[in-house]
Length: 467
Image (cartoon, rainbow, N blue to C red; front, side, top):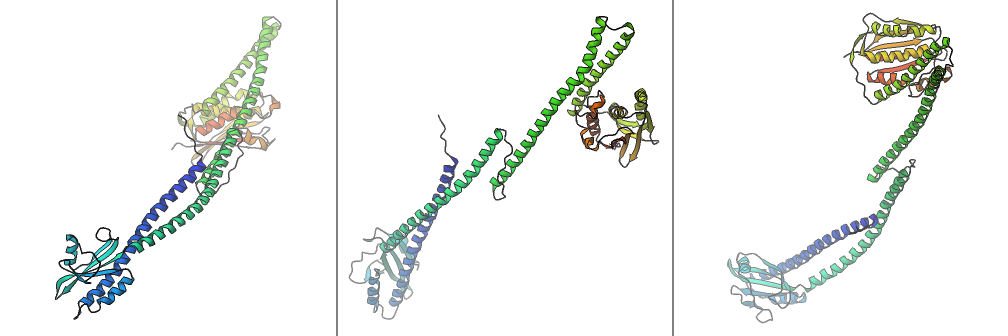
């Protein structure tokens, strides 16, 4: 079965009109009921006032003298009255067309208690529908009978009918005005939804530079604000995806470039050895070169794998307190020959009792990367490894007097695939410093660089003490 589709515009109008119609009906019913009760209460009160005057006349020394005057006055107002005794016999007027008084036992009990009986509508005991009141009167403090005054309700009914016509006309006019206002409101709300729908379609098509009008007037304004925030974040995410895609392409190009050279060298050496194209005295050199190029390839692969493990939080640190001089001397010893080949000297400066809190293997990896980087860009210089305590942190510095880094490049050296001074042909893959930053962050520390082109570079690592 196919679901019936109703536009939101018509739903809004239907909801507005339904609420208004129900409200009008309830108010009309209550108003008519109130006016109806008020009109009959007013008529009953009028009859009671005349009844009190007639009873006052009956209780005089010579009762009945001026009753005829009341007959004339009341007939002019279409009101009839009788005086009756305890046996319901009509005492006055003696002659008339007024029907016998037929009160129920409950109605008589009201009169016998000295109270006024009020009946707003009576359709059975009189020829016409009337409102009547029956009031007791006394002689010598004894109940002598009562006075009954009756008035047809036709006048009241006509008034209420006229009021109903006026009320219906007013309701129709108000309903028409409300319909026009509802059409305007519904169109305004639907237009705002249509703008959001159009913006959503644009985003689904990849156009993220959309901006909806915002306001603090209602929830639509809040929704527009949230929508614009979402669009901005999607725009940023899309730009980041583009940047990552460009990095990936650059990465693939770098990988191809970095691996092509050692693979070409290794393939050439193997081919030369197999075809006896390399002289006997050069074979050892060729094998050594092939071995170095193989290690270079392994280093490239290992660095990339290591970075991915760190980035995905797959590295668990085993922290301990490490003597600073012991750690720095390991770096000094392992890189001594490499530094010597470029005429560099590695110097260690520590204070007695300096303790570094961290993972021994990872700290060695951090300092090896930074120190190798210093050796790479320093010739016939000095590389200083130092530690000192400052507040809640242990500070490790690696300083060289090499070629330095351009100020514009300092922030870029931490990027994953960035490689400074490509003309030097360093053979490094550009992952070392990215790994350093990730590992320092895992230690809850921070690392920064101070450098000036041609005046050396200083890496500063801050690691918190054990708490």
